[in-house]
Image (cartoon, rainbow, N blue to C red):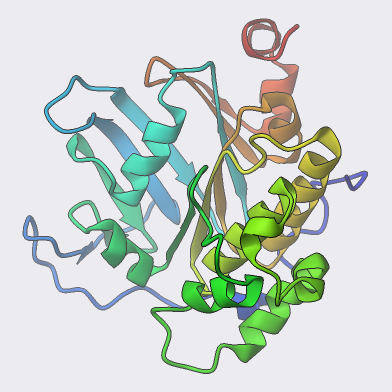
Length: 274
């Protein structure tokens, strides 16, 4: 990984992003529409309480946020509600309390598909590529909501992940685990998202591949795209994080910069192995 992952963010090519202004939704509440709101972080799941279907609450007054150009990391023990918090922000479960706001709009009532159209890119932990399709076809599928020329964005993806250019005609199912994750991230970037959400991007890969993926995530953040990431490799993730959230039983246990959490004795003892 780079020696100083905190340095020089936000000064790279921003044309891969889509950060212009806010949406045009009208102020209609409760019917599946978004509506304008004032102030606050670029993306926030604010005081979220909820679970799956009619089941018990998994999240309890949980708040997760990320600003433009930041990397925000959600860590915590197994079963802490990390991925559930990510899915709540993406609209994959109903909130009983709380709100989700993106770039000046309350999007709490929007479906995941509508949130993609609003600028969310989401990479799930598993089943995140089409294994029978080539790398290039996967990237083309990622641009399904676009009506403009996607070739420039695809070239940017290949510049970010050079191995994908070499393997662009190869079925994605034949790639290594780390290369598959690059395809998944690249496919999400093909929408030119306002924010990129990654659920366990380094799950099941070797330490060397993990470091390479984290380097690429830093490069994406340098383009100006906010990144919200759930990660089991807590120490390594906090090393690249501008902001960190430690969840325990669906609640915020600790919040701070990545450096603050790495240096917190209680966080180190309880969650980072001392």
